[in-house]
Image (cartoon, rainbow, N blue to C red; front, top):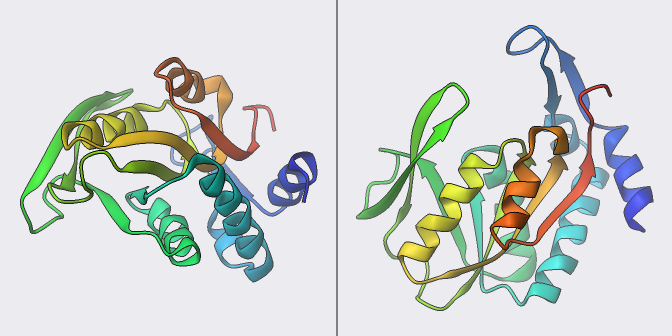
Length: 183
């Protein structure tokens, strides 16, 4: 499916919840895509084509909706799967990175052995907003000697600036569709 057709197909299936979690926010609910087997298949196939072009060694997914996409993509491509979790959720030796959010701060972790030095990692999440978690995730993998070669997400919210921050950091970004705040 061509990019414009794919974008339109997915956008029609994303539920928008107005004024959630606070007034003025249009929350893009991707669970509707996970509940639609054909949409889910189409998304994973689109991501798989990107991974092949990027010569990805490891799929790394962001807590929590990213796990759904990342797990399916890892399975599809027969690639190792690494988890980026909130601090305190991984039981093994970890590496952590703290970062600032628009409403505070957060810390994420990966297992210290999430991948081997030199491996090429694709970061996967449900959407790109401000980019803070994805930038912090890239730093985590760099700490253990891996190279993040791209970011994949179902949705980009370009008005929030995250995808541009990622590109400015040298990370190729692939989002299957984008929403403006007005949509």
